[in-house]
Image (cartoon, rainbow, N blue to C red):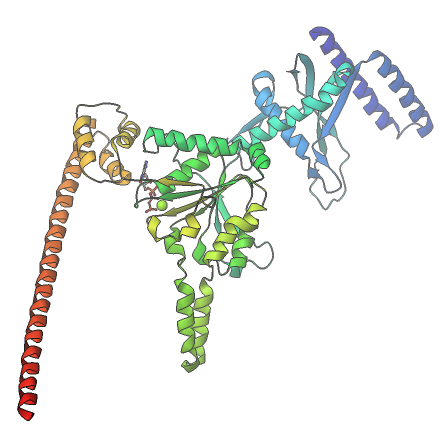
Length: 516
Ligand SMILES: Nc1ncnc2c1ncn2[C@@H]1O[C@H](COP(=O)(O)OP(=O)(O)OP(=O)(O)O)[C@@H](O)[C@H]1O
Ligand SMILES: [Mg+2]
């Protein structure tokens, strides 16, 4: 089949050339003669040439829009052809992680196999007449890809194979794409030509789950959860829930909340939308921003407790303020109104953001809230169903230290490790501080020295914590003593008062008695 197939493919190319000559000959021969010749050759070629060809042109339609099928197939072929094709072309492709994308050169051919069936792909060009004027940029070359296969496999190729090529091509493009980090623009700049609600830059955070220091068991659990979500399209459809998941990351500063978000984005290959709530004026704007996000993304609201007064106190405060506005001069009044307008996103607005429109907004979105203080948040915000998973990021444990030691110093065990393990059990230090202390201060600093630096820092922290505890205990004891003293004094005073009252009433009785 191989040799004969190649032979037929060659024959196919010859036929294509003949057709091309026909097309050109229309200029020189009478049209009826050309169409007769064309019909006749078609019949003959169909009889002797059992192959079918499908062409995919690079540009389609009037506006010369680049065909999505062409790009996707090219991506598929690039992944498959770069090892097989003899001649390749290199291109810089926008939004791709790899600086140069290799693909089949023009007029090159490769073979592919699908379920045991062999097929041929070739990339071709046609020279066009130079256009005198065009509004859209045009080239004098037209490119197209040609798929050739035996007519016996028509159903297999047009059905499953092409679907396979397009699915695979899309998956490769997604994997290779450059991730983006979006931030919301203030709504005052939303109007006008080309205005957008989000600005973006390339997302290049180096944090991954390998570099993230935390207990391996917890890390595995999170990874499993993310994979389940990413592959859960059918599952979410089956249970009738929107394909979304909410994570609440909480813990002290420097424990890796932001690093985890970056690791999630790198792991899932999702874009990140960093939503700055204080720049959002009202609930409707919040909804508009959400609608403007794409799927396969992580929407992040950092420090949710600081971004908003979500405890319902805002409303009360505004009402109080309203009482005396009548007395203020117009400029002050206006400034205050503007200020109030500054951030009018309310808890219910945020809840709608999560539950309402959010659910109708397509799928594959992850929402992450971070906070340093879990108990400061309104229970309505963090109840299950809204935030599906709560993840605590805490002080550095021994397991987390081992990850950092491996990443920063390339050591997996050391005689100083047991000492560090003991100290980490006795004192609280964030992974950020542990990492900082572990980092070599000069190029030639030895592992031993770096570990010793950490031990010194841990001992110092332990000492400080001890001192702090002692001071607090002393303060508490003093407070308790003062309270006891105050209570005692109060009691004594009360007793004296009772005594004094008794005396007075006794005197009164005496007085009354003498009156009788
Ligand atoms: N768990 C961790 N694993 C690895 N590195 C960490 C971890 N936690 C913190 N770091 C290091 O400390 C730096 C600060 O961490 P990060 O910004 O993720 O903390 P955070 O919890 O988001 O703090 P904040 O509450 O202040 O926003 C990171 O750049 C990283 O180098
Ligand atoms: Mg952070």
